[in-house]
Amino acid sequence: MIVLPRNNAWFVSCARWTGWRLFSALLATAIAIHFIYFAHVRPALDWDVVAYTAAILKGGALMKEGVLDASALHSATWAALGPYLTPELLAYMTTGPYRKAQYSDPVALMSQLPLFESKYGYVLLLRVVANVTGPVHAVILVSLAGALGLLALLLAKAWHLDGIATLAWLPVVLLFKLSSFASMSTPDSITAFVATAGFALLLSSRIPAATFLLIGAALLRPDSVILNTILCLALAARGNYLAAAVLAIGSVAAYQFNVVMSGHLGWWAQIHYTFIEIQADLAGYNPAFTLGQYTMVLRTQLGEISSQPWAHAGIAVGLLSVILAASTKDAWPSLLLAAIVVGVIVRFPLYPSAEVRLYAPSLYMMSVLLLYLASRKTSTTRTSTA
Image (cartoon, rainbow, N blue to C red):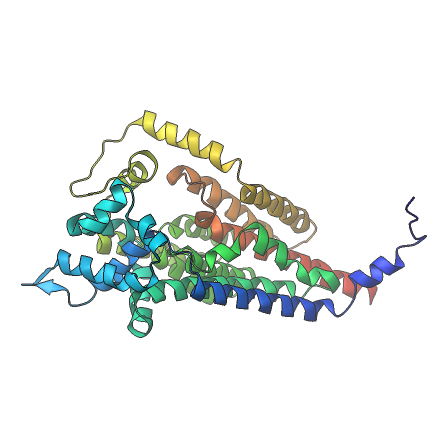
């Protein structure tokens, strides 16, 4: 038989222990070291690193009579990847009809690049970093920087809480798989960081800096224009018409820049390629839109996303945010929370993926908002008891 203590003073004392803040900082430091170590020792490279390496090198002098030399680019790409490819990873990168074609056919690899160069701002960032580190390491370092930035943002927001609540960033890191963002071969980690940092500034009413970063997120990943557009409506509803206009125009301009510079194949071609039938050679690829295929993709992906633990965690964070936002007289957090939720709802039918990485900006923005609201609640409680 378990005998419970007659009061919970010991529990309260433990929860309020002032040493939790130091423990939180040390734990976050240990996690950051873990990210750095494994990003360098055992990066989680997937096939996307092939395309982004080619996109980086495409910016070099691989020309033949004024025309990009596909064979030279192909050879340079696989040569750059060579030191990072174990026999198992090389087999993974070259097995199957699609990957085999990219490994053996320079023209097929070249045809894939518009899909990846559609994140042209990200490619430009990689090219800058690659001048110092080399192309593959640039991909690794940029993703690592994004993950570390997100970790720092979450820690900073939880820092204003008291006692064990200063560890509130930890469930977010675990539930939304931040460790996987530390070595992604995609722009999602750095985009999530830039967008979330912009949102944190927006939350604190530092509008010009927030606008700059949110437009930067659209440069890194053009589909950021969706959430940015909803945030424009929130700014307009608050009376920040100039900021709303600047964010809208800047985000649309960033989107158009990415599309024009990459020669992207178009919305339906991207959907068809990703969810219906992948193509080894995208030259002349222009599948006809059919409502039946689109509906099938929506239905399949909706079923997939509804079973994802990260989606369930996102709903929980959203509900907690609603509860805390309802207890404050400031309407701005509630308006921003509504914008995030609407942004997710609008985004899904436009690109119905169930991958957590594509929803990372919304998930981490909502987490920052939750920690912000909790810290304000804590501050109010301190004031009332003083």
